Length: 148
Image (cartoon, rainbow, N blue to C red; front, top):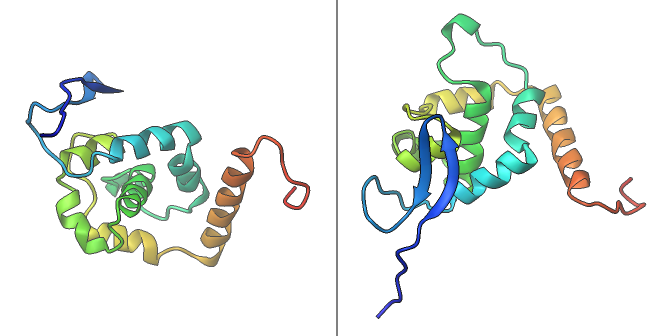
């Protein structure tokens, strides 16, 4: 018989909502690791840095989803093993994915994420590579002379 615990795990707040994990049921998701991914992202700032590095040619008056939210949604999906964009038809309504991204509303659709990926330019790719290199170096306190 499994030894289940009744303890709660707290993951902070989004607005006035407190995020917690427990075993009482309610809005369920099979991707509980998303909250840990979210915490790591908040700590290292990867989705913010990537969104800042990308150009955003969208008309500000017609934007529904913030660029950082799109990047976070795509990153978190990849971290959970959802490589294909078609998985986001379901994930956009998943309460845990919404919470991880930082919203309580429906996330971006598969076509929206596809447009994000296909409009990337060569300079976007270079900028994203630079972000990844900076993140790598930042996570190593003592920099190896071969990479510095």
